[in-house]
Image (cartoon, rainbow, N blue to C red; front, side, top):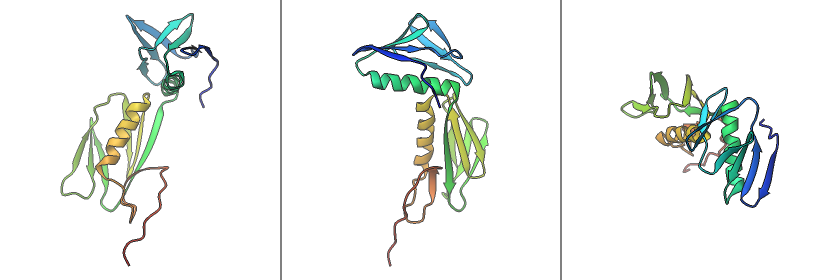
Length: 172
C-alpha cells in the first residue's frame, strides 16, 4: 500500500504534501510533471512546488488529495485491472498496437490502443491492463467491457475478474 509520509491542511483551500524520495518532479514552464519507476504523470493546475513539497490549492481538497495519491501510486507501483472473457468462441490476440477480438459476431473486432501509457497482456481469455494513470486504465477497461455486455441469464460476456453478480432465472 501507499503510505502518506505527511500531509498538512494549512487552511480550507490549501494542502501541503511531502514529495516521496523515489519520485522526481520537474517544472516545464507552468506545468508540473512527476517521474517514477513505472512512468510519468502531469499534475493539474491546482498544484505547485515549494521547498520539496507539493502544495495543493483548491476548493475541494479531498478530491485533489485523492488524485495526487492515485498519481503517486501509479508512478511507483502502477494500476492494474484484470478482465475475463466468458463465452464459447471468445478469443483475443494482440497484434502490434491492436487487439483482435472474436466475440461471437460474424466479424472480428479490431480494438486500437490509443493510450500509449496503457499496457496489455493477453493470456487465453484473460486480459491484464496496467499503466501509471488510473483514469486511462479504467477507460480502456470500460471500452473493452462495452464491446460485449454481461448476459445476466448465463453469465457470458466481458467481466472484471473480481466482479460478482447473480444469475437470473429464465422462463419456465
